[in-house]
Structures are given as C-alpha cells and as structure tokens.
Length: 320
Length: 272
Image (tube, each protein chain N blue to C red):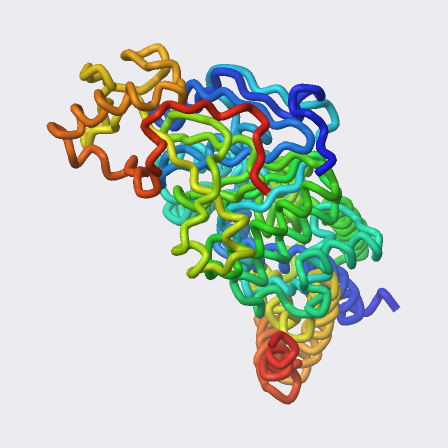
C-alpha cells in the first residue's frame, strides 16, 4: 500500500478541544483528532454519544461552541449523511443524483458508479433502490466529485452483513486509489474495518483511541463471514479508565465519581493503552458495585489471552 | 389585440402560470404547502396597509409577505413552537388583522371578493407588464439558485458540507415566494394562489424523470389550466379564478390515470 505517512502532510481537518453545546447541554466536549490525506479515522460509540455531532462540526455543518476546528483551505468534502429520505414527489434518477451538488464529467460518473457496482442502475429512480443500493449510490455520488475528505456517517446502516463487508472493502479501495482522507462513523463496536488507521471511541468525549487491534483469526469469524471477509474484519479491544453510570455521572477507575467526563474532570489515566492490565483491576473493582453502568462499554467479548499483558499499539500499524 | 379583456386575461394568466410552475415544484418537494398558504393569507394584511398608507398595492403585499417569511424563519430558529403551529398562527392572524383593518377604514369601499378570489378579467396592460417582468425575474433567480435549492431539498447538511449555501438559498426562495404572491394576488386571489403553485406541479410529477423536466412541465400544465379555465369561465359564466383552479384539478386527476402516467409498473420493472 503506497500511503503517505500520516505525520508528513498537514491534516485535512483537525479538531482541538472541540465542544458543542445545544440547549444548555454539552453534546460533545474535549474532542481532539485530525484526519490527514490517506488516513482512515473511524469514530465509534453508542447511540447519542455525539458521533454525528463531531463529524458535522468537523466539516462545518455545525458550529463548535468551544475549541477550534481547522480545515485545509479549499477542502473539498464528499459527504454521505446518516439519514436521507427522498420524497416520492421529487423525481430523481441515479444519474441526476450524481450531479446534485456539482457538475460531473460522464467518465467520472461512470467510474464512480462502476466502483460501487451500480453502473447498470444509472437510469433507475432512487426511490426504487433497495437500502444497500441507495447507500452505494450515495457513496458513488460522494466519491465521484473526487473529494479531499470523504465523510461517511454510518455507511452500513440498513445493509445486511455481506453488504456491510462489501462497503468496508469499498471504502478501503477508495482510500488506496484516491489517497483521500476518510472520516467514518460506525456504531458497531466489534467489527471495525481493518484499514482503519485510528479508531476513536466517543461517548460525549473521546473515551479512548488507538489503532485497531489484530484481526480475530478465530474459526468463528471465518465460519460466519468466510476467510476472505475475516481478513477485513478487526476487533478493537480496549478498555476504559472510567464507566458511565445510569444517571449520567462518571465513575473513574480510581473510584471517584464526577458529573462529566471532560478531560479536566476526575482522574483520567491519560488513555494509555499500554497500561491495560493495571487499569483492569480498578475497572473491575468499580464494576462490581455499579454493574448496570457498564452496558455501553462492555467490549470485552473478544479479549484474547494476551490482553492482560500490557502491549502497545504502534502508531500507523495496519492490518490488511 | 390587447384591447380585448379576455386576451389580456389569458396573457396575464399564462405569464403567472409559467412562473409558478418551478416554484410550485419546490413547494411540493420541500413540503411547504402550508407555508405558501400562510404567506398568501398575509397578503390581505398587505392590502389593508396599502389602503391605509395609500401605498402601491403590489409593493405592500410583497413587503408584508416577505416580512412574514422572515418572521417565520426567526421563530422557527427559536424552536418554541412547531413550524406547523407557527404557520397556523401567522396565517390566520395576518388574515384576520387585515380584515379588521379594512373594516375600520370606513372611508374606503373595497371589493373584498376580488382580493380573495382574484379578478383576472380586470387586468390592465400595466399589470401584464408587471406580471411578465416580475415573472422573468423570478424564473431567472430560480435558475440561478437551482443547484443549492435542489441539493438542500434532498438534504440541507449535505448541501452545506459540499459548499452550497442552503440557508441563503432558502431565504431567497422565500423572498421569491413573496414576489410571486404579490403578482398573483390580482389574478387568482389570496385564497387560491397556493393551488396554482401546487396543483400543476403535482400533475407534472408522473410525467417527469428529473426535477428539471418536472419544473418545465408544471409551468406548461399551469398554462393549459389557465387557458382552459378562462374558456370554461367564458362558456359557463363561472368566476374566472376558481375556474382556473378547477381546470388545474382536472389535469391533475387526468395525470393519475394509468393510461396517461408512465405507470408505476413500468418504473418498478426498470428498478428491479
């Protein structure tokens, strides 16, 4: 994979300590990350954790109430929104959808539709497409304009498992071919595409981040998705230094409880993944007394035997 | 030729229908039918103010309609009440205030029915110039705003993210609505303006494969409705404004017949 080093280029977009407040409530706070050319950044987190808000702030659809969002000048964004319902009264073919926000050459249009496997549907009305086809049409539209930054808000929603894998494969291909930066949202905590460079776990703030861990080579995955698909699936196993309680307060690893999980509050452990085993003991301790506060954060399903040994994730590590 | 009141009526009506076609499409796509109603009801307040201040009628109607649109935008931002409820309040409040004001002005005698239902047979040559001039202006503006308006109709955030300015397009669109209502009031009247926006556009849907075709067809169907309605009104001695609306309705019903439409079956076959 001929990819530029992430640190080399200036980021396409970078957020520093960004917070968004609506109706007196912080939707997200203290968000820091950047997306560079050729990099795939995936945001994961439960519903209502501020993933869409963060992404919309990054591309300027929402305004940050604190912190700073910096976008490269003349940044061309291709956006696939989370929810898009097209009224039946609007006659829109796939062909017309492609040029919705700007003109396209016929070859760019065909190339993009070919890439998503919809070239034969070019004259179909979008209202007649299936969920997966429509999602792919939206992706074709976004990539046809050759964006610097491709932003996909839950691109696999309403898509079955095999379709999901096809879409992840496609995202990887797009990055490899065009070298654009990709900002991706997934609510799927277990299955994160292997090509992801950085995974950011969000729950009102950045809970943790890192490179996706080694793919599960377990027979179960291979059996479920086939060996080829299993190669593109990765498990991001990680642990938090704090737990969200049912009443919205936050239980920290050292047992203290605060109202928010803003980085300045409480006693975060610096999100250090190398300290896994250490954190674990505290974490489990808190778990015992507040076990229902754990619902959102139980990612421990695929922890492997060596998980407790405290290993580092080298930056830029990639599993293809 | 223009000396004949009937010819003047046809030219004015066709000019208006050509203008309302594309605008009406957006009204349907963006589900703004009630908004259109509200703005047209506010026209009566414009009439009352024009009589009170002895100010140009069309201009007063435009100013009031534009003010109500902007008021609506501001109130919607505050999200205290649903857009639906706000429209209901503004719609009837402006209509009622207009009627009350007219009643207070005992020194003027106005033909309320003409304002409510239009008097196309009374249009002058100056009116025709106004309708065609204003109409060309509105159509040029719609053409200029087409891409941002259409993209934000599909999804405002998508439009915003990809560098089109949906908020600006929306504001312009509302002002264009105010212009059209100001010039349409004389022809179909306050109560029937929305129907000339919506019915031709709805009738055009089944025959259209792209938004652009639908906009053009809506204009043409509207023009046919005007001509048909006026001839009907002449033949059966019915009021002209409502006759135009009935003619548009007949065209809409015809468009629903499978024989005329492209047919659901045909498009579905294409899709699968």
